[in-house]
Length: 69
Image 1 (tube, rainbow, N blue to C red):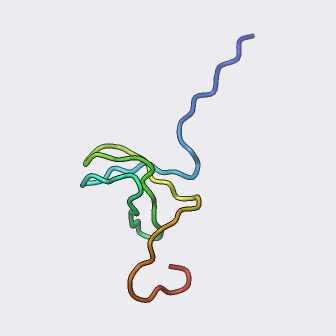
Image 2: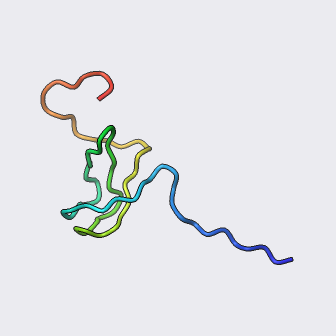
């Protein structure tokens, strides 16, 4: 019996994202309750992906940052 090969669909720590304006790899995207990071450039109105997990070095926001933000 031949085995059907697995087909890669999407990392469980990434989500589909279609921006209204172009995004560059490394951009931080604010979502309603979290942030996502663009791993690759995404053209405006084109389907791409945001990473929701991982370790990223992000510049500190100006002003105060509350615990959990």
